[in-house]
Length: 356
Image 1: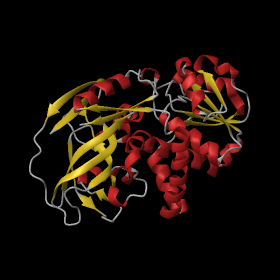
Image 2: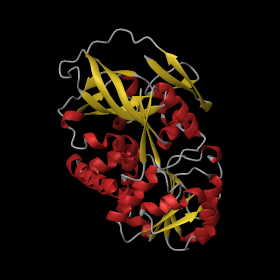
Image 3: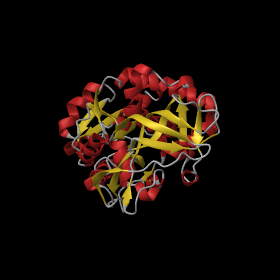
Image 4: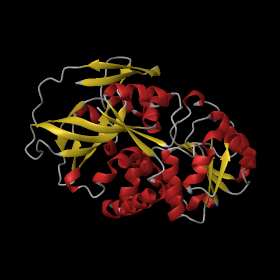
């Protein structure tokens, strides 16, 4: 099989390697990876990999890491009595051609990978959906699910959290990196579930037209015009990870900023530092898996799934056609496009799907 190994200390540097698959373990299944998307979310996994354990899902040689992806795979070998060869699944996959998993907690709808090394991590990432009985699966929308699905769910969880806190008495939601897929997911959910909160998107000058055309924001402002932000009771959700930009937002809104939320990092080169001694609230990191557990505990799995599915359908209607899906063949293409994304130079209107 093939894998892409990324240098942990220089994530734009990656190599394609050949590996021996070995014999399939008792109770395990072998997946041939059919497709996965490459988005800014995957870059975030690499940036914060050691701090949040993202490198631990798919082990690699010392100093190297395998970036997790979301995608589809097919069972090509099975030592598990309940999982048949030929079955297709959706879930967390390595940037590779194959993956062995050890199914447990098997139901008609899915299973968890019980491999020992994956148990310390959030169970959210260890779940695999069996497509034959998956209510979210639409064969015509597999590309959109890979590109938007995980990011949309983070947006859904942020809106659920903010609404559960009565939006910290704010009436304005300021979102950085507004062209990113997670930001668009948040904007869509807020548009439908919290329409009383004004949505303001901040983006680069070159992306203003794209973000405005999405129709998800009440106002779009370029990064060099942060001074135009209305000083109204606000919450800020920062997807950019740009310390200088975050400081500008805090200084502009000052005491009218009621909550500052940090999510991901799409601007790699300017990430880190700069959050000390900011005016207003101390920025708080949003870790989606913890909030997913809280959602399912608060609403119950059935109601949580129902609400998320309704918002997902609304999001597809809002933004499902905002990207042109581009399918690239071969794992070398994944290596190359990932390096480009680390540099932050991928058009947000492109949705990249790799078919290893």
